[in-house]
Figure 1 (tube, helix red, strand yellow):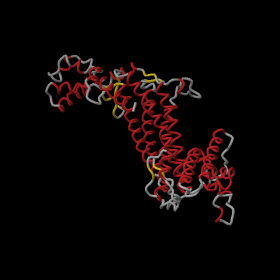
Figure 2 (tube, one colour; figure 1 turned 45 degrees about the vertical axis):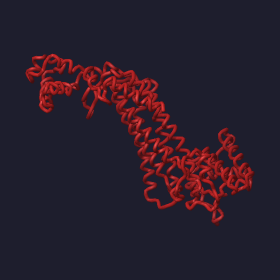
Figure 3 (cartoon, one colour; figure 1 turned 90 degrees about the vertical axis):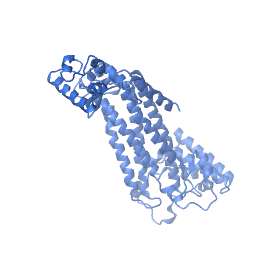
Figure 4 (cartoon, helix red, strand yellow; figure 1 turned 45 degrees about the horizontal axis):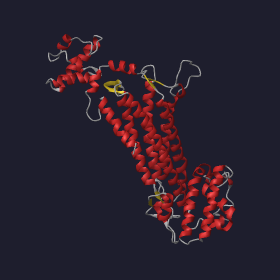
Length: 457
């Protein structure tokens, strides 16, 4: 029997029941549902809406139901309409009429809004923990490689010399902003909607602030219609997860490139790579590729949520049941991607000699060579043109800036002297970029220090 069957004269078509049911996916919120119901029942007793002994019995029995579900002695009924109705029906079976008092001054509308907020608060905290672990690994790798010179790229072309440490800290900054976005999303999720009821609150003398305090919410919703029909915090979290996955996907792309024979900057640990079914020599970066692929899936979840919500009038609509599968999918996949990517990165072997070798080719010290002329008084644009001519000369004659003789340099400008070789030395090029945020060892160490301070807060 359905809780709401009093109004209806026909039994629900079995297909409609299956179509309408959400217990297959909202069952994961059983703890939040029961915890929220305990707080609600305690408030009903405190406010004299139901007898204190009834409230105490409801709370006691709900806690027993929670223990039974977690021990496995109580299985969630797959035929139930949703987790809320399942818990309430078990409660009523166990304590009879008293159990029917639990839903006083409450609707499933505000109940589900409460559950999803509580559930996502927990998940946001877990995702933050995953990112913090990744940031710590990045700081560790960066600290070990403040002097590991490698080429930096623009347009996937070798551009200027940086260090592996600087590279790692670039991603660390991206993930730090992801933490900030999650914190802001958490604050907007940490608002208690219970008491909104179906949409127009209640005539009972409830104490919403008491419930919020019991459940660890900082605020209560200001408007009952908004309280039950708002899902922008779900959309916002999906947006945050999409950005996290975008950063992971970019990092995955770098990893895939670096592990290729063409780059050979890194090698995957055997525990985090796979082989080919036909080519015995292969070592495939499947984790990085799957992270890159799953990014599109998370984007799809965000698009689903935006599309579901875009045309809904106030207040609650059944369409909003579609929010859970999308956000659960986004949360689950982001967490596993973060966890596996972090482990893969932690075991990655970097080939420093290959990085240095790549940095020695491609004229990535050309800007430094131009700056050498500028520091001796030549306008930058004039210096830029001369160095471009020198690079063209080197390409035609199979030379590098380091292997050109001083006489060859002077053919382009008499300003050149032997100190040009010091100016274009790759280590000096990196060390000279010592401004705040630059790739010099001291600058990267400062970046690591600053981030570690934030991580320890």
